[in-house]
Image 1 (cartoon, rainbow, N blue to C red):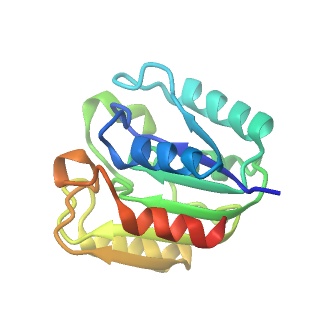
Image 2: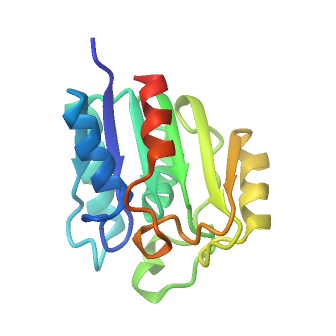
Length: 179
């Protein structure tokens, strides 16, 4: 049976040509089972609304693999802290923002406590040496606190379209290894 992949975008969404929309298309082209969840009001997100939408997607879709980008990482942490979350096989935490992010439009998401458990059998944190939303030192500290593997990309910014991540072959190949 094919494994199910749930893609979770951050603030502002991950519309084409963002790597998440590209990856959703590539996964579907290979007959993969993918859900690219579109959160409500992604330009002005509300924590309670996004939490409910994520909980519904987890209950209905029952993913094996979850790939978070940016604010979706923070959302995942909030959900983990409720301890009301089903365990998944693999979790990708891509470009999480600082746990104490100070962006006014996102203030209800922060600060967030590092969860004691991520509810994933295996987790990979993917960070950049020059992410404007989380320093490399913060990323390394988060990795140690979460006790997960880390992949550091050199000068990849926020690992989004603006930093050249539309087509992301490494992530497609990585996903294929776990599908």
